[in-house]
Length: 83
Image (cartoon, rainbow, N blue to C red):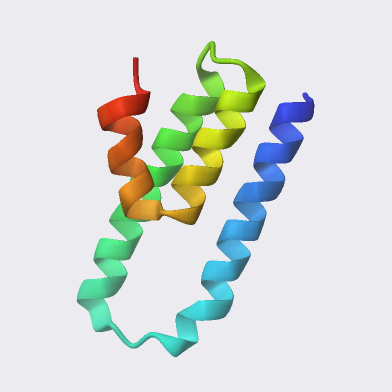
C-alpha cells in the first residue's frame, strides 16, 4: 500500500510537470502524437514494474528512471530491467 502511494505521487508529479511545460513547446500535431504514444508506453511499463515481484526499492528506482527519462527509461527497462 505504501509503495502504491509513493508511485501514485510520482505519477502525479510527472503528469503535472508535463502539463506545466506543455505550453512552452510548440511541436505541432506530430510531436503531440509521438509524445502521447511514449506516455502510454511509459504508463504500461510503470504498471508492469508495480505488478512485478521485485523488492519495493527496485520498483521505485525503475519508476523514477521511467518518469525522469521517458524514452530512454522505457528502452532501458525493456532491454535490461525486464526479466
